[in-house]
Image (cartoon, rainbow, N blue to C red; front, side, top):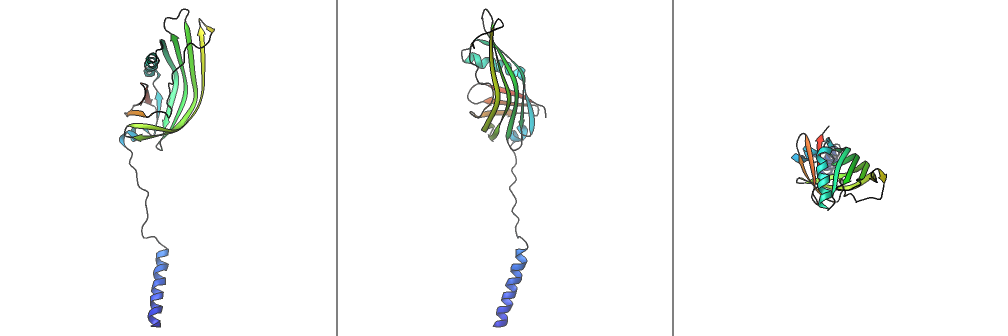
Length: 191
């Protein structure tokens, strides 16, 4: 009986010693395959098409009852990485001229800085989260070149984490459309 018990203990010790040095199963992190829209939109750098955005900004002002002719200049670059982090580097100027004003009233609105956040997808809707805006915003109004009080209030014309964004994407172009409102940002791929 002693031999049998000793043999069993030796066999058990050998089995434990052998098994502790290795793992029978190696757990792998599950591989997630990006959806078509994720693969197209993320991992790239995009530049706002200010020419395409000008009529969108103007229509947005008119929808709110503001008779303003709008011009958009400057740049906005969006970097959207594979981890869904978005970075907007913005240096935009919106110039609005009040329709029919005599003398001419012009209001310039500038936004410069960086906005960051995450945007995850639910189907083709990007849902912005954890938004951090570091934009220096300035409004200057003139009437025939002389400074005057602001003639109107600009509507928000950039992306934040308040609404989801309907997203369409091709190899060369990305469109983000605010689900609440009619703002559509068209970006061209630059990297």
